[in-house]
Image (cartoon, rainbow, N blue to C red; front, side, top):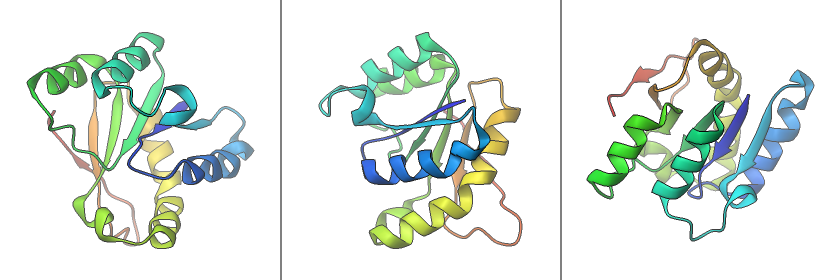
Length: 136
């Protein structure tokens, strides 16, 4: 499975999660800037990933820039994990630690999906990781 970490999270975090996930063998994690230029419009990279199939997106963005963006996202068939707004208020190391804590649950949930799903990742993990499904 291939994961893309959006520009609103540091590329170093995507690279670290890629290395941590390498024990699984079939997991690739990329920062958006690894695949596209930093100024690529969301609509363009969403369409590109959609055409490749097998991608999961992790983002702090809610993709609310316009109707065209929402429509492309809905039609993309991508599985998307939105980090809840509390993530934006946290410092780098706190985000890194918490995303690593959530990562196994994100991978498990993504493997169950056939695409076209969206989930909110709350800041608090709890004893059992639970996602809230989001309507696109």
